[in-house]
Image (tube, rainbow, N blue to C red):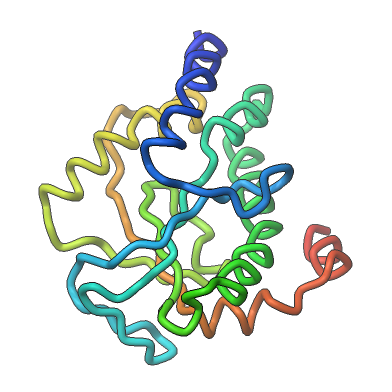
Length: 191
């Protein structure tokens, strides 16, 4: 059943890509698709002092879920699936740093943002986890991401819908942590 859903999803994914105005930052091996956005949430102060307020420019990160789920389809253990996702994101972070650094609006971009219910390990990557204030927005995002949760978690012990969180990383922290990371550094940290 899962393989049929993934096949259907892979057919719909190009349409989703077009409708959301996403762009690849590395079409071949990366798992991020991004777009420039204006932040619409409450004011947030990140741990490095970066102030993010309404209408600030951020790069919104979307994981290429159909690619990830296709890769994880035959990974039986949920712990191993989580580690695989973590490694794929870690390997894509230098490309995200390079994308923001070279963006024509780089001076205006405050950082990157994602929204997810699969946030374990995000702090190790440098993200800060903050729950959106608006209850209706959280509910909408939780409902829209629930199919991804079901497909990525194997056989969940409960059908409780997990909470949804923002993941923030400031541009300075992203560049400082990932801009100079080499392939050798990434391979070393994988071990």
